[in-house]
Length: 111
Image (cartoon, rainbow, N blue to C red):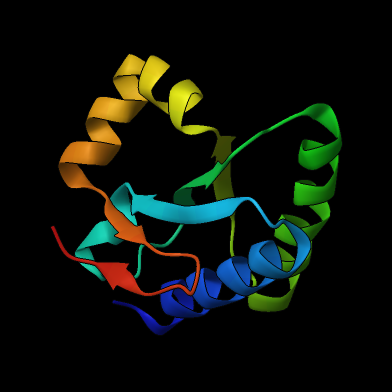
């Protein structure tokens, strides 16, 4: 995995874990799953929580913006509950078939 993606996962997981006690982990999917750098591509992530109300979403975006600025990356983060994620058929199928799950500590989980 590229160092930049590894750093994004580490920083996002750490920030979400500190701010939200219902953070369950994240999936990396899209172009960066192959471990290579991809110019002009967003790093695509699904972040899972027990709830994703308006207040939570408002607190998530500053975390993402800070990491984007610090690491000079573009992130495309989808905050979901498990149920919301499963109900997004197209995204769910893509992420489950190709994505990599990282637990709340930012450690990749093998199937």
